[in-house]
Image (tube, rainbow, N blue to C red; front, side, top):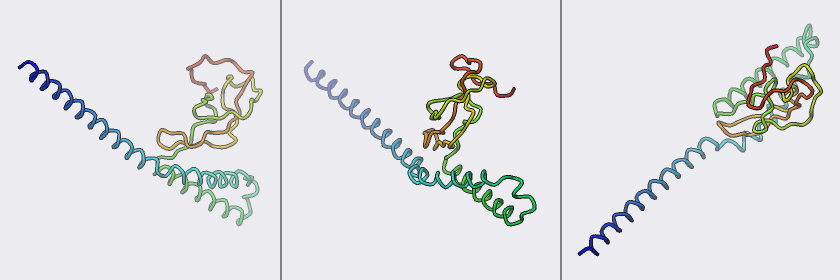
Length: 166
């Protein structure tokens, strides 16, 4: 009879393994479905980021002095500002947010260094120029920020944050 008991034990183990594998597959499929829902807008968001860039460029191209006394320029600028705020608010509703860049320590996971800027007043490795804003969707990078990084300033040990309060 020991062979029957051994066979029962083997079959019990196989059932337990099958049950565990089924549970793993179920969890994996749930995670994939959740990810599809979270990141479904990623491709269209990437395409719309250029709209946000152009709105920002338009706003940056109008000097404050040009708005003063020019009702048309002021009204147009206010309209563009409202459009930019609405777009960023829509991004936020879908988990899309700007990557912190200006004044932060360079992070290759979030930033793409385009140049080094000689600046002895800033700790080395500080983002001092943002050429193009980066964005994340939930916890994934959608587009890195294109940045200029300081060199020539005081060295900051790895892992420490840059103190830009000075």
